[in-house]
Length: 73
Image (cartoon, rainbow, N blue to C red; front, side, top):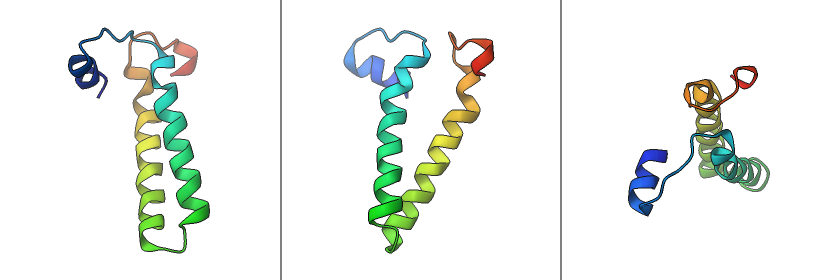
């Protein structure tokens, strides 16, 4: 994802944990919205489930990114 964004933006993106901060914050907001405002609907439950999967996948792969300190892996 980061490589695709860098190529599209023609920008160099550092290998640092802060790069993912905005993405994690946005996913957290999306999760909160679906889990509180739309949980009674099929769409809200599915978006809640999918967002949890995305956040867990990021968490599980975080240590694979260069620049992540050993204590944060």
